[in-house]
Image (cartoon, rainbow over all chains, first blue to last red):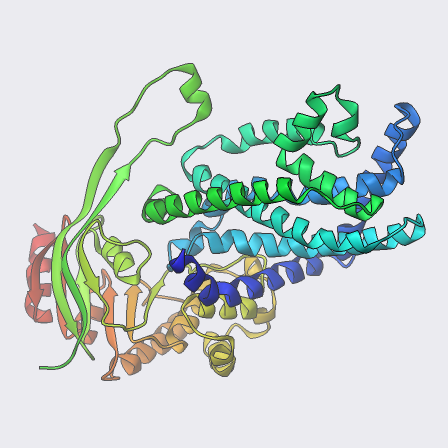
Length: 260
Length: 243
């Protein structure tokens, strides 16, 4: 852990600079590109909102915002885990030339995604105003929820990054798992209410993504305090996964270079 | 006796030829394939003094590049120790780790930071690197638009301008066109003449090694066959290769 903090300090500058350049390169490719960061989640929100409120007659308060929150956080998690699988192999040309702690690659990736998430959070704020959602002091609870969210994504990313080196078809398997995850996580419905009890209650809490999205909606849309106990449970679990994965990565990073 | 800048002691490096695990393959048939072990470097010991320039020669697959990578810290040896005595080290080899979608200038910063320089230090060297690389306006275009010659020129410029205490050079002395070749050779000679720098060069070019090196190490199948005076070692090597 000490080593982790020391290296983090040393390589943070690299991660930030690299993330900045990546974002810039994305914009440079076409002048419409930064608009895509907004258009993409917006259009999927509109599709889901239309399909589910018209065809399936779903009833949730502030339905478009409800969906948009789900999409925003799910997309972050989805991209983070999927891209971390091929992170080591994709950066082979760098890590065969110079030593770097391998998880810095994940940190860099997450910074890029976090920037896009920030844009979406801005959009959510605008939508809250447009839909005249009553905002209260509990909106501040988004901060601890975000911390748990990033910790969890980092944990999942580290785990995938390590096994992605050794398991060649992990990407395909994960695509299926994440596809299932998308539907049971309640991006466009509320897990707690749609499943018969007590399954709804259990599915909500056993699935970290479902629970985190539930918390975000609670403090943004309903001005309610999310359960701090469940948040801390998932925080502790994430930390354990991080420590385990870091140990694995430190132990095996010697072989990564030889594997790829 | 001069100060020792690098100490390599009984280094062994093992490659595990592991078959990559696949979920699908494992579901279909359960064959636990034994990992094959291949030892690329088998007990290398040598020390380098400050200001020395060591050439490594040997046929393909004799473990030269593996040894160099281990010294650069890309991976650590399975056995034995490599002591850099606190010196900074950089590996200069064909096609450095560039990010293809970023511009040459951004890649200068990224490579520099990975070598342990701060943004400010790189800024000071930036112009020198750009000038030396001679790739003109391409410096602000994405690296994926570069020709292979431009790539190697930029690589060489970055590593030779961002000076580290120990420089490891892997087969890059024949970079670019005639003009750049001469320039980079001159640059190498200048870097080498600095008494504080240690350089290790891997090359197949006997003349270059003869011209530049103070000592030559001949490797074969992961062990040192001979190490010492360039003329002697290179003569023996030539004899061996002509057999």
